[in-house]
Length: 366
Ligand SMILES: [Zn+2]
Image (spheres, rainbow, N blue to C red):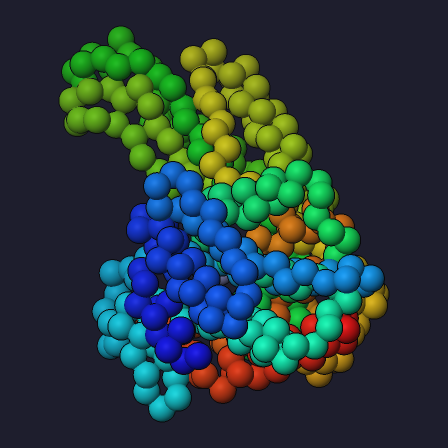
């Protein structure tokens, strides 16, 4: 199974390249153990892979949700090339080894062993590895939509993201917006004939700074991009910023949008030339699984976790939470290595994960 992980790492599945190669490797491997898989392809190179081991259906199903895509290697130097899948002292190196091709291989091992053992399943065992988790959640949205509300009743959902076997049951949502101020171009020597979009943005930034200082209750806000202007001698007619909000159940998208609109109105009342618009770039809800549920408690017991925790990052979890089952995030690998050069995972941890997932499957589905 080390081979599968190496090949998966070698398959560059950044959003630009797409996920087909990764999906094919997973399908090929599961089919060696007679697990039927389907690959869903769209937009030429985007792909999800889905396996469904059917059962008598007496018990609620389990759904494992992975993602195939990885973030780009970045500009920092890697000692071990990002798509080499190099092995050193039991560790596999490369982009995606931790986030989250390692966890994916963990559940693939578990499914193969369960199916090969010939054990009778009383609940369905489902696995999906999606596209675009790192960018726009396109894969998981497509997966959820494909069921059209007809997903079998689920006992629980597991996301094998790297957590070093901590059990994560909640995280904030994310809400990315682009705000553009609109002005009017003019010759740089006659600025009074134009409306300077950068000046408008300056007034907005001052207000956003005040807003940020007033935020409470776990919402965070960071203005992370800015662009505007075409040439030094032209009054700019557009200036844009990108803001990363991390939301909580109390601070929803709707509340943020309405707060932003209030700021725009205030600025417009002070300066009739003020003009700005909001474009939503990405939104993912927050995750809040019921930690008192039997599934979460059983899961913690299997992985010997004393308690559950929250993640700083967002996952595909909130989308699959729509299936009305508790979602846990737990898998092999050090989360601090995610998205960094020389990302690596110890193969022993993957085997350990496979053991936990198998135990859960046997407990819940037999
Ligand atoms: Zn991930």
